Length: 189
Ligand code: SAM
Image 1 (spheres, rainbow, N blue to C red):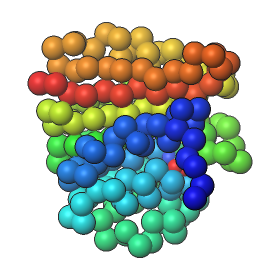
Image 2: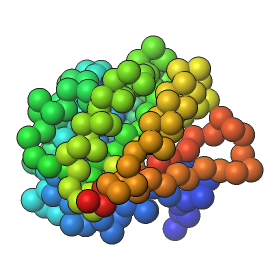
Image 3: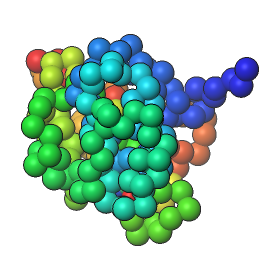
Image 4: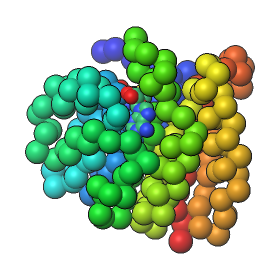
């Protein structure tokens, strides 16, 4: 059996961390569908009657996500819109949301997520999270726009009221400072 790297592969560790909560999640947002790997993971581990909104601004990304998740398409809504507009699409409160920031590997770097729209989307998601709902965000400071986005995001999350949210950060201490790192935010009231 292939062993999954969970400590150095930040996204794998995050996936394992949210597994128990996913089992009961009904409304889930994948804010950056990309190649569909995260959407597939979310679809595989949520109940049959869950609904997953998969956002991306690239037609090709959503096509790839649609193909990869074909077995679960009944519970997925594929949304070709910016996650900054998610409140126009997602009417319900949210149990779980995932942002895997940055650009699609092998695609134009210009199509990376940027803080301006990420901030709007994260703010909307946090408002819509149910109590005990979770939002996970993986940031990629390895390129210029990603570094700026990660810095702004970290500062923004540090300012969140601890009466309402608990924010954790998972970072590789003995790897390059440019390695991806993750935030886990839980709404507490
Ligand atoms: N979750 C993906 C996977 O499992 O393959 C990887 C996501 S990739 C690192 C980031 C994605 O965010 C890209 O596909 C990009 O098109 C998308 N993106 C960039 N800006 C966006 C926005 N404003 N709204 C939604 N998606 C956006």
